Amino acid sequence: MTSIDRGESGRPAQRRRTRKAIVQATMELLAAGATPTVAEIAEAADVSRRTVYLHFPNLEQLLIDATLGALSQAQVDDVIENGELGDDVEARVDAMVRALQGMSPDVERLGRALIRLTIEPHADDERLAAPRRGYRRVEWIETALAPIRDRLTTDSYQRLVSALAMIVGWEALIVQRDILGLTAEEGTELSTWAAQAMVRAALAERSPPP
Image (cartoon, rainbow, N blue to C red; front, side, top):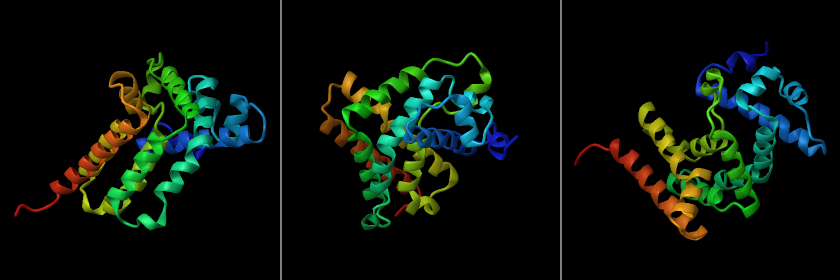
């Protein structure tokens, strides 16, 4: 059993790292020009086939997730890691939200397909402990919030990360498009407004009363 396998049933951060390793290995195999099997992916990620299936109940879901990563990861990473933003957390969060909400129609279609594949509950309760999607989103949020990490308690920080995860990404985009009937620009402005409000609220909780 590898170190990644041993961490698969541990804390959420460990499970996200395992999922990331699996998706990264799949992205690299796809970039080589072949459609990999689960066995090939497991070998490349240095995990067992069982671990792959704990995180991805079928190969289709894994391939879509990896394709989404190939299409979007560099774009969002570049925006968040822009040195010009410095420690301005509101600017960092704003840039992250705009990058996530501004994906191409092809990426949006893949995101919708991934949601369809992950909304049904697993028959195996053991799989419920593993996040089915969204680890990139959590990592991007944590990167954007890095300048204020030490200014918040652990509970406040985790609550802010969780709150931001609810208002950006595919689920928020679907609500904006399908339920609210917003344009892409209107949806982006709504998400950035909500994200900024959450950051300010979290910081205000730590400020002493006048």
